[in-house]
Image 1 (cartoon, helix red, strand yellow):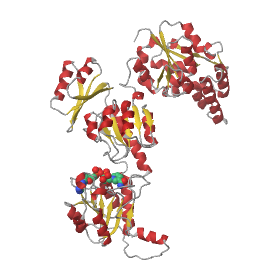
Image 2 (spheres, protein in one colour):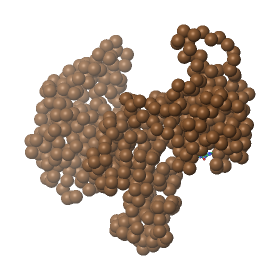
Image 3 (tube, helix red, strand yellow):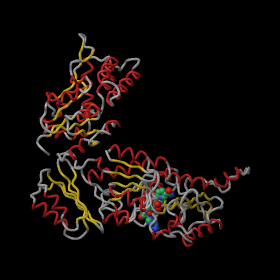
Image 4 (cartoon, protein in one colour):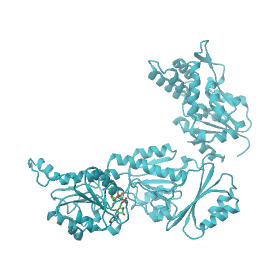
Amino acid sequence: MSQNKYFVIDFDSTFTQVEALDILGEIALKNHPEREKRLKQIKDLTDKGMEGGISLRESIIERISILEAHKSHISELIERLTDKISKSFKRNIEFFETNRDKIYIVSNGFKDFIVPVVTPMGVKEDHVFANTFEYDSSGNITGFDSTNVLSSNQGKVKVLQELGIEGDIYVIGDGYTDFEIKKSGVANKFYAFTENVERGSVLEEADHITPSLDEFLYLNKMNKAISYPKNRIKVLLLENIHPRAVEIMKEEGYQVEVYAGGLDEDELCEKIKDVSILGIRSKTQVTRKVIEHAKRLISVDAFCIGTNQIDLQACVEKGIAVFNAPFSNTRSVVELAISEIIMLMRNLPDKASLMHQGIWNKSAGNSFEVRNKKLGIVGYGNIGAQLSVLAEAFGMEVYYYDIIEKLALGNAKKCSSMEELLNTVDIVSLHVDGRPENLNMIGEREFDWMKKGVVFLNLARGHVVDVKALRKNIESGKIIGAGVDVFPEEPKTNQDEFVSELRGLNNVILTPHIGGSTLEAQVNIAEFVPGKIIEYINTGSTFNSVNFPNLQLPAFENAHRLIHIHKNVPGILANINNVLAKHDINIVGQYLKTNESIGYVITDIDKEYDKDLIGALKDIEHTIRFRVLY
Ligand code: NAI
């Protein structure tokens, strides 16, 4: 960066997130009967002035008269504005401190509040150019110094002309008056600052659009507080992902593109090229070919439970972390299971359907309470364990069987075999995962092990039950009621017919794979997955990743974090540490975890280091990916 670069920065909606006169209005009109109406008038006048719709002087005069403000309101205003300094300005305070002599604040606002807000950030008082209020003898704001050029059109241009700065002038602002400086030829470049507001007419004129000060510093190769401007992280969300997820990712500063539908392989190969984060649901196939087309992909994220649609191995080989939402809809499945158990024990599906045919069949036959009944849970994972807790609250006696050791919750009893469990219980509920070995896990033999008159639920995966055998056992009366939500073959769309041997049976609840489909679950997923992504991007933490070694990392402060992903071959950690030693690096913390494919090494080091270090680490053989965080 050349020595002769000067920075002219706007105040309202640029240095601070807000328009100061709007806030002054909120303070001054606190108890005014026309408060809302007047605040709206002030906002409209600000916008008109900013977009070049009315003359600046008119806009200031009118706003001051509506405000009815007083000197005593100014100190509260300063406090509130200080709180609202733009986030990227706050974190880049070093930019203001190190470039004090080159930074000017030029604003059509008022020095009365601008100076006290900007000087603690390092800006020089005599580098602030703005209007000043006029007060009457009782302290009411009655007007402004109309001889100040900043109260007139082209005022900013005039200030810069008078300053006669020799060097390149870069203007950062959100309004038309900021662009005018460049237009007049006084400044070299105009950066439209969009962290707080975006004004269409201004964006069109900008040399660059900068969604944050980080982006400005990045473009100008200057030191910045964070390693990479977040607006450069492009997110592609497919398949109608819940708007809450979009909102969270935008709040984080990412550039988010949303598609209601999915994309096929070829479309995705094209779109994926410059995408950093890809969010999908169950339909989009993220194949090896798609992954090979990705140039900047950091993470693929399933906004659902299953990840079969993603080539996890292809992702891991390219150092792309995959996350999903393994328990965001757990509660929804459990509630459906509980309700079905109760309904089936009361023979409700039949009773309700008879009523619709006009048949009144009042009887207690085949109707039972669930209290004191024995519930058998096969698969004591997220869902099985949660069901265990709720079922006990209903007074049921819970038994479970799992192939791995699981802690029994409450008074649940562990069974040492499937046979023992099925021999014991009155109700069987399956909650195993869909691994291939579980194909037909429940067949003739297992139905034989069950007691007569059992209730049976499968809300897990269709292929884990031999459906023919299930039908036979329902027809024979061995199973007195069944709830099935998942099927070996499910219709691809709502337009396709549901074909199954389970249709047309008494006391059988069939549902279209909706165990986890609730609005609450959708919101949970929309909050959980972005949380994982943001944590991974900001800290490197891979906890709960589906394909990466799981590392939960401590926060890092006053350090740079080096993230090294490599093929899992012997000796890499030693190579990394040799490079660090050669560069005399002081290691603050180091974490390593591997899986069959990759090694994941995090090294926190002191902030001061020779920049050649980065190249040397990237050059280590078998490195898949390397990034620095700060
Ligand atoms: P999880 O992975 O937390 O639990 C599965 C448990 O089953 C594990 O503890 C595992 O050790 C155990 N397991 C696997 N094979 C077994 C076997 N042969 N015998 C005994 N135990 C076995 O999974 P989570 O979240 O509890 O989900 C369970 C099932 O529910 C999955 O199949 C999932 O696809 C399904 N699901 C269905 C939904 C729906 O809409 N109906 C929604 C959400 C999940």
